[in-house]
Length: 67
Image 1 (cartoon, rainbow, N blue to C red):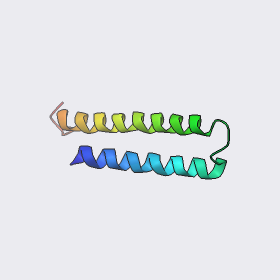
Image 2 (tube, rainbow, N blue to C red):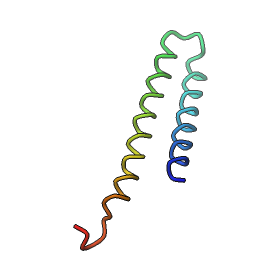
Image 3 (cartoon, helix red, strand yellow):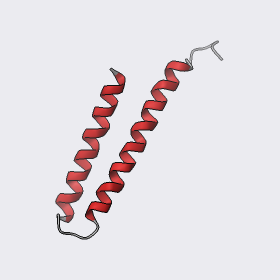
Image 4 (tube, rainbow, N blue to C red):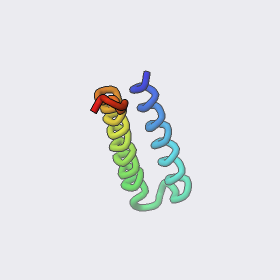
């Protein structure tokens, strides 16, 4: 469930950021699609980092005495 929720969260956030960028700049503005692609890549990186942190938390519990 965590994986699906994480992917959904970052996908919706990326979509909203892209729509905002296109609505502010306009579809015919040069470079707008490059900025949208850059945002998509950034959101993708953060999604992978979030999934890695979730995996790490499950793998290495931060309880006293577990270190």
